[in-house]
Image 1: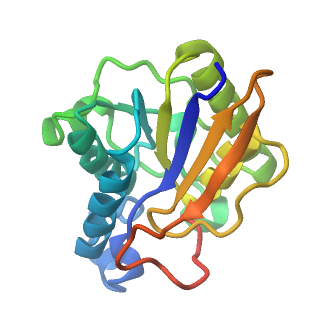
Image 2: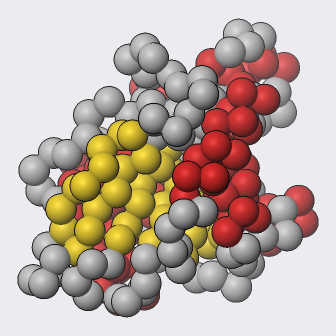
Image 3: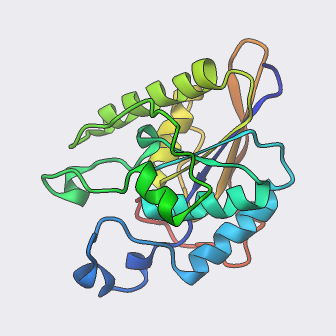
Length: 218
């Protein structure tokens, strides 16, 4: 549908990038929460997105994304649908030989009432992923979301740095993003021929404390 919008955002600042000791004492070291600054970034992003007509919110199952998505959902009065197809790049160099654990939608709903526990995921990624398999998984997820599940709706996806890039490539084959900082906003608009063009790329003008350095995507 011409004029339909899709937004890709990265989660806010994550705890283990600020507290070097957090990972050593954490029960699940691969699933850090947001910092207080990360929650502030998410609130400011929610304020920016509240100007838009969002119909569907999709989130990676990792906690930092869920927390970011829930803050936006509460501002926009929507539910959050947990989609493993929008998860982090399952890079063996980052996570080791076993797939990282994340909570199910039912478990997350106990903590976050905005979670839609009835949503049926599109994709379950396999670990480990190469960059090629990440792109294939992201493309499958994007095409299913935009053409099959929600062909008329405006969609927001809360995900990770490398996944913002990969998901964008699923709709726009010329690489539109390359520096994906915390809570940055990328917007694509659908054209007549089901093609999508980026109209905002990694925008952080609405953040009072943006991330200024080149990040490690995760």
